[in-house]
Image (cartoon, rainbow, N blue to C red):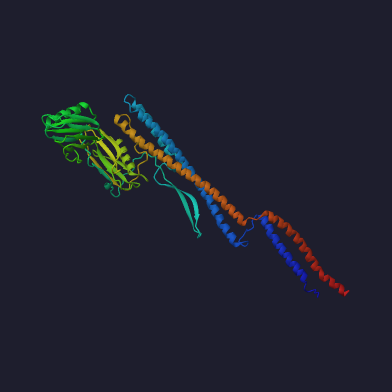
Length: 512
């Protein structure tokens, strides 16, 4: 049956043409935009995933900029630290030259002052975009990553670069909680009077065996004579004639032999053998480290050094701002610890502070106890300061809450114009060189890590972009072939619709 009201063929041809046109429109859009999924209506789930990943790519581009800025800042600090190391090495050369007495120490000091000024200039200029990693104690955080978890939450990760203070300031002594329990002056076994430390050996017995003594590696043998007193007198003469550095022997009478040690920091070992029938009683004078009374036969004792020790606790943690003080003859010498420092740093800082003072006849040394591992500052006084007198007064203190001393604290106080100043400077410059080397090494390590992370972020960004493209980008070869096919289909669809629309015209012939 034919109808002039309803043309089924035309409707079918029209629907087919609409479908073709719709597919052609999508293909044309894919070709023009390059995307298969250009909006949420194309594929909601894929579009949503791609947008999340695109936001991460944007974030990683910002992180890349942050890493570049951080790397440049650290590179400046590293280069400055290496330069400071070289300048400190030059200063060490000057200090070594000043150890000789027949040189012009005034001119050497002038060179040291010039190098010190140059170090300050380098430290002051070592900034990038206003940030100086060689000044202060606050660490720098560099945004390094965005970590997305499975639940969709995002957390920022950072690379922390510790500042390495290369300043020369003395810091500000704290006013917080007491740290007096972490520092102890005048520990047992050390004489603080400035005089020699004495070791008394009292010989008693009968004329039978020889008295043998060994003082710091030198052996003396004395035959037992008429009595102990005579034997001791002859032994004292032997020891004095040997000319041991800093050691003198005295016959105190009654069979008492006194050994005195005027060496500043070197304790001496003493051993003795009084034979099978004699006894030797041993006492250290001037300190509380008394040896037990020896029985007959061999025994040992220690002739302690002429110095007083300040011992730092082995169990205490050192925090930024912890302040420690040694007072010598009423003058305070402070060191305020910085971030990440140890008791060794505190000990060396206190030594540097005392060395930079005006204490006549006072010398220092830092040692670590072989038994307890405690760090100690040894302070010796030779009694030559007429103002202070023959003895040295030594006290200690400690408090929290200070402002840290500079990493090159004491550099301003290096003075090689005197023998004692040149000697002290040689030890202190080693500490400063070690500080500068550690600083450069720390910055070098941080710069290497930042470079690695920056390289990784670049590769990660490329991988994310590739992943996004595989989800939403159009296959242009396929789209091109499909476009041509749809264009042919569109032409055929138009012709089909035209033929279908002409079908009712045939009905008119029935009415002719």
